[in-house]
Amino acid sequence: MIVKILYRNIILTLLILSYSELLALSLKDVIDTTLSANQNIKIKKENLNYLKGLKSSNKEVFDPIVTTNISTKTTKSQNSVLIDPKTESTTKTNQFNLGIKKYYLSGITLSSGLRYNYNDVEQYQKTSDENIYLNISYPLLKNNTKRIVGGNLELSDIDIEIGKLNYQQKISTTILETISAYFNWVKLYKAYELNKLSKQRADKLYEEIQILTNADEKPKSDLKQPLASVISKNLSMITSKNDLANGRNLLCIAMDISLKQCAKLTNPTDNFFQIAKDKSTILSSSNIYHQLLDDNRVDLKILNMELKKSQLSLDISKDNIKDDLDFNINLSSNSQNKNSAISIPNLASNDREGHIVEFSLNYKFNLNKNNKKGQYVSSLSQYKQHKLSIEKIKKDAHFELEQHINKIKTTVGQYQQIQKSLKIYKEILQDEKDKYKLGMATTLDIIQTQESLSSVKLNIINYLYSFSLQLTQLKYYTQTLLSKNGNEFAVNYKDR
Image (cartoon, rainbow, N blue to C red):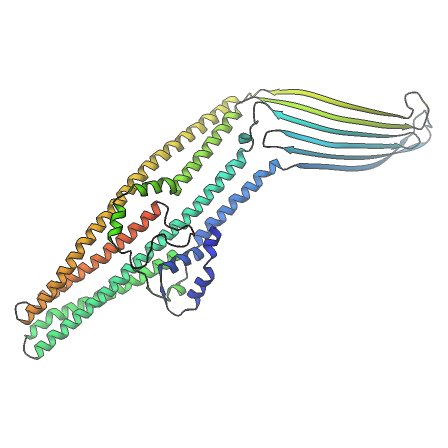
């Protein structure tokens, strides 16, 4: 699923960024590009593959071990005095060994195999020996449970789950950074557009006053304040344009695209999240977000996984303190065939067969218990630390979440109040213009009112930016930043 997340839109995104001359960017474009291009996400994925490889290597101990040996040799030696001491005889020896050993998660070790030995002594005798055996060893005290014997495999499974959670966290964190950078770009773009409109108003005011002064309806001195305002707006435009370019660069860094691709981006197409009544209604009940935090927070899940690792390490270190007691069963079947070339008693041709069934208990004292006990105490302390850390972090996380929700409520309240100010300042500006025509106000009064109106509009931009950022962070805290598909922002980011 996560692989599909990263590569679903990669071709389309790269084609757009590579070949379009100029590009207006939506929030969805930003998210898709980040998921397909960001190197930090890819690095985290490779780390997950590394952990999976480690698990495969830990399985090796439970793979069957097959050993085989085939040998043949020929030797020459002086014959026995019973045959002819003046001659030599040739001995041919063939050996074949095949063994299989398997270690099981239950702790049982099973060994079985076949041994075959054939001797051909020229002019003397031929001998063949066969041995089939089966050995079963079962631990009664130490290493006799699946959890302990397969401890490394379980630790590998936990590490893989932690790796998946870290991968998910990296995607979520990267998307948070990208969305935050996008909203910052939106804020700077809107501030730039606001400054551009403010400059246009200053230019228009200057032109209007110039017409009045040329008609001798107003003194020439009335042009000084509007001209100073125009110059001030020109300076603001230079700063605002530079800030906008820097904001775009920060967004490109977050998406992890090249400077050449970044230069093609013109403007954001999506707006901030709009503050509506339903938002404040949702925030009035924070229980749902606290429940989401308990259910979804990745850092808490990782800590719980670390707690499982500590518990397993604790169980293994406790088991290591025990002595070894193994129950063994040995079964073997032997057969021997001997053909002698001379008729001497006990050397005549004969066959022998034998079967052995053997039961035994092997006990080993663990004389290094102080070291093992020290490891147990250390593991117990680590387990308790993880448990206390989870409780502490979970408690703090709920306080932080509640404070964050309160911040959003505060922003909503401030936005609602600033909207009232906006309406009032629009009316005041029109009044000042009417009064100026009647000679009851100065150009400075109009300029100051325009500045106040621009300040109110800028505050609205900042409040909407703060609200969008805070709502994004709320989704991040509760791990609902991405939808189940993993590539769509869970909140509707389009204008209402």
